[in-house]
Each structure stands twice: as structure tokens, then as C-alpha cells.
Length: 188
Image 1 (cartoon, rainbow, N blue to C red):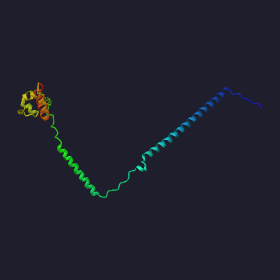
Image 2: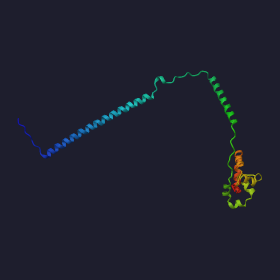
Image 3: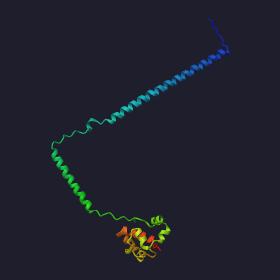
Image 4: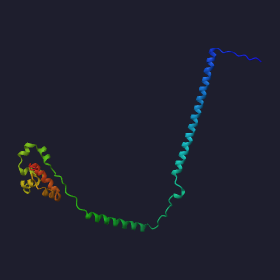
């Protein structure tokens, strides 16, 4: 037998080479697609197994379920016991409230000297007498002397007396401090 080789033209050789490349590329793509599908199948199976494990964990075992207690039949005794407990607690609350010290008086003056100055203006304030100024911030002029204010709030004041007044009567202390500020005796 004789074998005859047919020689291919360069164009046919080029076409055969391209066909071989295409076949190799298709085989590689097919292998890659199969690998991707296999990985996807494995991921789905893993997700299903994880979901199954989670559902198993969320269900308590039959041995840990709480047992149903019997319904009490003596409602009157339970009601009376609860009512007695409430009365006892109310007595404790009442006793606690009566032993609490009262809240301190407000340490803020109703009208400040600064607010009075801004409302009336400096000229009107200068025209007012000492008694009118003190009455405008809520202080009785007869109960306050300039020497007393100077002793509490002026230069060289008696800090011990001022501190004692602020502890004993914080509302009065705030009013006198505003009066000293209004009369320009505060640290003067």
C-alpha cells in the first residue's frame, strides 16, 4: 500500500490551526463551566445543610420544654394574698415618703438685676429710688440695709455668713445677691 500525503496549502494549514485553537478554547470553556456548576451545586448543598442545622438549633430538645403547671383552684386565697402584699407595700411607700426631707427652696431669684436693667434701660433704672429698685425684684426694702448687703456680698465680705445663709435659705440668698447686684454693692 502506498500512502499518499496530500500537502495542504498555507491557507488550509492556517484554517486547521484556527480550528484546533477553537476546539481547545471550547474544551477549556466547557471545563470551566462544569467546574463553576459543580462549585455552585456544592454551595447550594452547603447552604441547605446550614439552614437545616439552624432549624435544628432553634427547636429545643423535648426534654427541656417546661412542664405545664396545674391551674390553681383557690382563686380567693390567691387574691387575698396579693391584696395583703399590696397593702404592705403601700404602707412601706407611705412611710418612706413621710421620712423624706422636703426639697430645698428654689435658689433662683424670680427677676434678675441684669434682666431688669435690660428691660427698663439704664436711664429709667437711674431715675428709680432704692426702694423702687428693691421692690421691682421682689425684695422688701425695709428688711434690707446697704450695710447688711455689703457685709454679705461687698468687698471684704464675711464669706462665712454668706455661705451659712446660702445653706439655710437659698431663696433669700439669691434675692439678696440680686439686690446687691442691682444696687451696685456686689463686690464693691
